[in-house]
Image 1: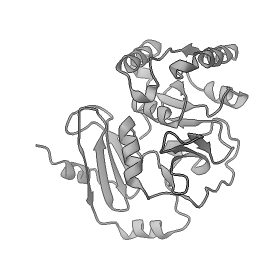
Image 2: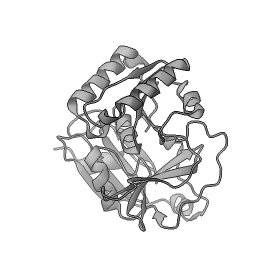
Image 3: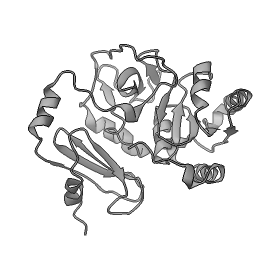
Amino acid sequence: MINVRGYVESLDLADGQRHRGKCPSCHRGNTFTATNDMGKLLWNCYANSCNLSGTTRINMTIEEIRKRMDSNFKIDTDKAFAGLNVAKPTQFVLPESVVKGTKQDILDEYCNRYGIDSHELSLHYDVKEDRIVFPMFLEGTMVDAIGRAVDSKVIPKWKRYGSEADGFIRGNCTIAVIVEDCTSASVVETLELTGVAILGTTINQNHIQGLKDYKKVIVALDPDAAPKTIEYTRKLKANGIDAFALKLLDDIKYRRAEDIAYLQKLKREFHGTADIKEPTQ
């Protein structure tokens, strides 16, 4: 049996650094993540059939401790870029009730449900409104955030904390997949595609300008949003974007086998694996 703790320690992750790659247990690609969070090593495999997870402590270097104590220290957020066309990062301050590093059990439970990583997404938690908060960054600066109510009966289910960013983007692939929300966009990233949540009821010029950077745009909204799927696709095509409407059987975040298989098939048909970049690390 593999010594997972030894394997994770051998990655020699610095404070705040994350690793994503092949699982040392089930050997599936890009399902295993490991994170060094202030000397606490956490690891998890998000494959449905693999229960690998764990945590251990390691010593922090003096330099890492000083960095954490520096009030100007920021997590490397370029990997979590969001905002399709924000010209310049502006000052954005979250409410005092939205904090990072608390209610980790709630964050992990939510993320495990969908096979995404709370640390990789730099999730926060709104202790006042009981919301899981997805920060949105531009050039290392938080420009907006959106919160998802833990209780599905709460209205509104999703809440914007700002108004600067036009979209939530996860991934680094030349093929973009437009989805309904931040969770679905994060799931798309695990499929080695770029997930884009528009965060609105229609596509505006900022969205169109940003989506022109992709070789192909797949509109994959929820099954009950068929009219909006058609509207988005037509508007993108009218603006010279190579867009394709995908009719899902369920919301992509639920990873229905038929939907995932067809999405992967489209990825291969559109460009082949040679044009697919590695997902955000």
